[in-house]
Image 1 (cartoon, rainbow, N blue to C red):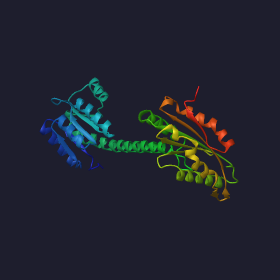
Image 2 (cartoon, rainbow, N blue to C red):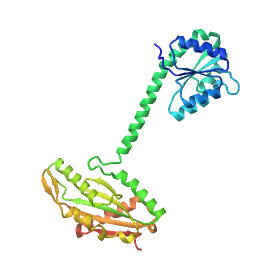
Image 3 (tube, one colour):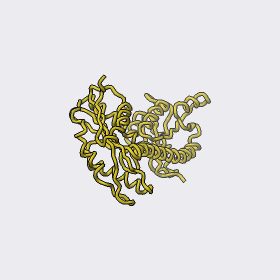
Image 4 (cartoon, rainbow, N blue to C red):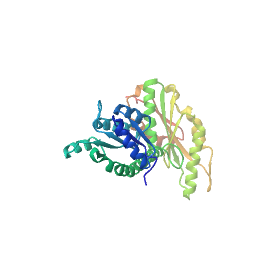
Length: 317
């Protein structure tokens, strides 16, 4: 059975021919049939509302069926749609038809046998259009899902904070900002000790608790990242490099070290080491990995001293 709502656009400069085609399609059960007397008019209609099938005369003044096909394919690319194109032709010969197929035409109907061929060819186009539109929809859904997965891949599933991939993106953004607008960037690496717990559940509860407390201790625009089970990172933009000092983050250090975390295994106290790397535009250009490496080298000093360890870039010669 035909799909009565199949959208069909008939393009023919001869009104008599269009009337014959329209009557045949109507008798076959198709209800959504539009008409255009030129290729230019057809394109205007397609821009307003796509069609599933275009039936067009090959030979038309100003713009023929092949040229129309090229423009329709461009519209299809822009709208993520596929239009099934059938040309009405009196031309014969394999070379002629091969040329048309290469230009994007899907099928032909010979004018000499149009009465016999028209409805069966449209039936075939109807079935193929259903398949094509379903595949296009599935492809859109797949693309959307991949984009969603890509976005979720920037987030640590346990803590809800950004992950290492997210950190690299944000670090690049911060460096661009201090280059264009001035100010300073402070990169804080937070390392956790005493995180070995009897159960996985308690371990996860501890990390979740650390993440929540960090969110309470930092400013709303600061970037928080969970690197792994024992390391977090905070990025903060400051007005000048002088503000990027250990005293500016004393509250953060005390907030992690002086108050225990509640888990199903009881209250757990941590020994958190914090080190910071500060820089402004004078340190540019610099690779994000260089900043990350400096911070990791500085962390043992933070553990040993029990205080926030700091350095500023560029390092003095």
